[in-house]
Image (tube, rainbow, N blue to C red; front, side, top):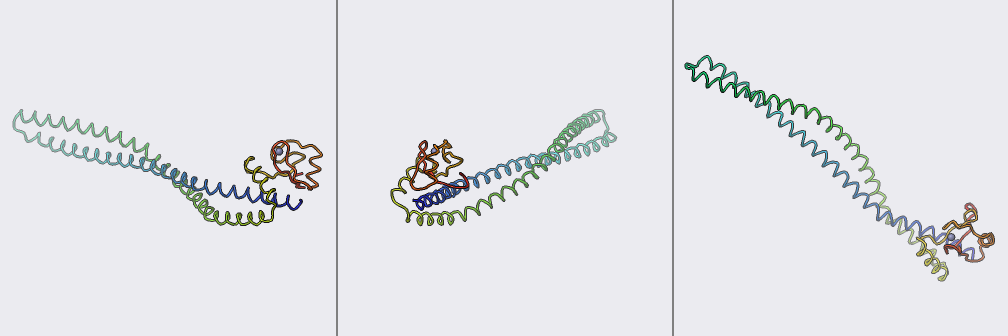
Length: 237
Ligand SMILES: [Zn+2]
């Protein structure tokens, strides 16, 4: 019976490890996908911001061009004032000068507004760029780590399955069936050590006689509260 209990404990260890490995095989690809999506969103948001800055810079160049044009036109028209022969002509040129002065003022104002907007946005873009670079480095590293783990997972699972077959081949069918049944009903944990006089699964305090029996290891003893198979482990006890 002692051997059976040792096999049960070993089997539980293998199954717990298998459960973890299989969970990891499901969770890791999802996590990788999540990280890639986050990175993509961060990149898109950065690109949008950079696009806004580029638009502003384009606007700035446009207003600068318009401003220069207004200045040129003003100079030309002012020079023309000296060449006009009639009052009518004079008035007409004067009107055009006023129009160009308006244009100059408007473009000056727009240029200043645009420059202020650039001054506000440019450092934000720089900050975001830096944050993205850092996030990218961290996330790529985690993705790499997960991919690495994933690569080895199948092999580890195969190894544990072989170990499991080896253990179960040496076990009594009925004991194995009991184990499987309890494991199924108890969230994967069928074999637990007695822990400070209590069941290591449901933590109910066990009667002293039961503890003595488990320590002896002559029979298969189950926790009367949760039904898990109790084994003796000197360290936990
Ligand atoms: Zn219990």
